[in-house]
Length: 207
Image (cartoon, rainbow, N blue to C red; front, side, top):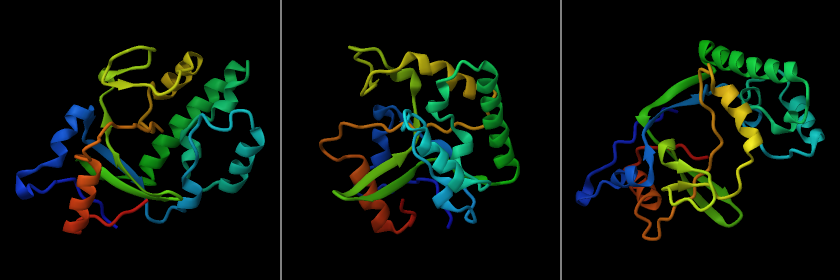
């Protein structure tokens, strides 16, 4: 399956991607796993989940074993509950080494160059449409009461920021788990892009 750069149609004079800068979103170089990767073992939950349930993360470790997995590229925050500074340093080094190995071995490959990936998730309440893109962090502010274009939906745990910075310093990949909620009452962006892509049959990937 080959992903294509999002060259949105100009049909009826409307370019739906014109709304993206206003939404603080930009095109990105997006890497996806090789087609031979076991996706059931590749995908994992966000690193800030199950922070009080070590048995959950042990089950994930046992299930993934040596298979390629995002588990190797994240720092599950349950492991932050330690005073062992060396363990912290070693885990970050292991994450960065795994990133480099996945690139070298082409476990991860660039599938989209300066574009977007439109996703459709089937849920118990129907389809959820999403867009993988680059977020302009210069327009983000996590402080309470800010009027920045991009704001946090919940309180930020400041003590967790240093480990995330530590992973990114010298890292060869960026693997955030950010989910952005967007005010789009007129459905000018995601729904419009979805309908257009389906009518053009230019992308068949679904997630």
